[in-house]
Image 1 (cartoon, rainbow, N blue to C red):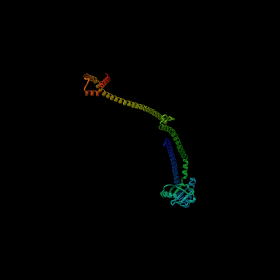
Image 2 (cartoon, rainbow, N blue to C red):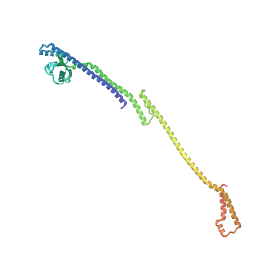
Image 3 (cartoon, rainbow, N blue to C red):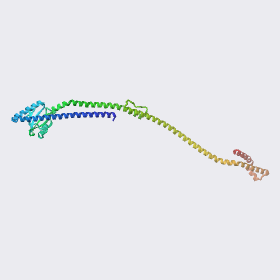
Amino acid sequence: MKISQKLVGSFIGISLLTGVVGTVAVIQSQKIAETLAIAEAENVAQTIAVSIAHLKDQHAGLAQHDQAADLQHYIMQMHELQHRDLEVVDRQRQILADAVPEDVGETLAMGEGGAQVQLTLQDGKPRTFLEKSDDYPLGIKLIAVPLKDDLHTTVGAVILEWSPMYDEAIAQSMPTLIIIGISSLSGVILASLIGWRIASSIAQPLQAVTTVAQQVMQDSNFDLQAPVTTKDETGTLATALNSLIQRVKVLLNEKEQRSEELQQTLNQLQKTQIQLVQTEKMSSLGQLVAGVAHEINNPVNFIHGNITHIEHYVQDLLRVVQEYQSHYPNPPQPLQATLDDVELDFLYADLAKLLQCSCLFSGR
């Protein structure tokens, strides 16, 4: 639920509570009016009952017919003064006097009203009830008050209409009820308007801040800024969001720079590693070449050290052979065959050249 809806709902709830309080006050006022009307009707009925008992005492010597006539006359006078229905019944619910003379002598019907009157005649307690008829479809509010003698014995009941009293009490309290109703309705309307106004002033800036935050997250555009339209808490929130966006932008730029630096360092490390590998390879190759050169240099030095002696030895041998040839110019046939096979003359010439090349190679 949005915050605007919560605020409007809260204010409407408060206004409705005010309306409920107003409604309860109106209902309570009606109940008070009804209670006052019933109390007044009960007092009037009690007064009438006392007056009827006193009237019987004054006319105790008269005939029963004359007493009934006086009672009917008294009831008619009370009806004209009070402007309400009034009747008197005995223990058998027979009507002794009535504002409607035609009903005198009849027995009160055992409807809802008759049942309430019967209970009053039995226990002697006042009761209120609603009596409906064809003439009064909405009903008439009546109260039954016990009629007692000097011994406090219930001998009948006085039935009095209290609707006019209730209507009068309601009429007197009507201005107050109207004021309460108007105040409650005005409170509901005013609270709703205030709630909507406050919700709009809070929800719209918050919605704008939320929209900017969502766009920044979705598009990764940290150049966006939330509008600061107020100087209250929502404006402070928008300012804080803008500062946060800028801070995140700075941190991302620093992160990119560090990433580039790390990438450059990584590339440099890779190049250095390649160079180290190549250097290691060259070092190994140099060691191999040095080892091979050392292995070659030993026999060469050996040859170099002995080639002079070989040269002297060969020259001595050749000189010996030449001496033999000068002293034995005609060798035996087998020896001559060997000399021919060896090609001694070629051996002299080629061996001289070979010794000369060896001397050159040895650096002599």
